[in-house]
Image (cartoon, rainbow, N blue to C red; front, side, top):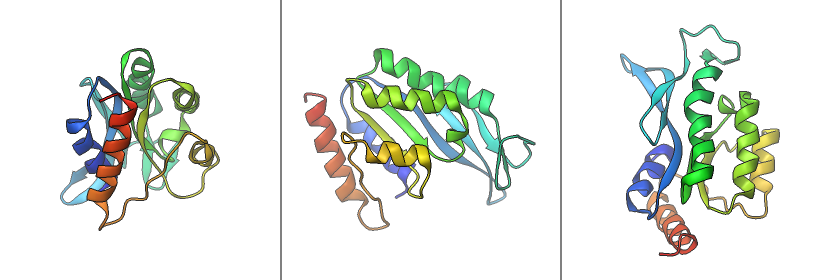
Length: 163
């Protein structure tokens, strides 16, 4: 079970109003060619693609910051205002090209409502600051511990959400 798959399965069981976004691979002919960003409220767009020129670029992908900010970042900003639980998938290198996203992440850290996010494991200045925040609990997902991680996260968030 991957990070996004786990996150989406948790959304079905967690109580309260959820807001935010998730990302998914775009595949053509069995090959990954890009990434889609989807607002939990419905709008979606292409975050990055091999056919996008960029800048910015990450590896072979050009990143469309305007689309990401219009869909993903706006979903987080709305969630800060009216969701019980904020969902952010993913805090990764592509997403962190957006200074608007970076600013919204630090607002999420100070918000009263809990959040559930996936974050890159490798070192990155912004991701490292988030991972080091005293209120953040990290769970490393492996190929064998998905159910255990899901249970721990569910119990923790249900307690925080008051159910």
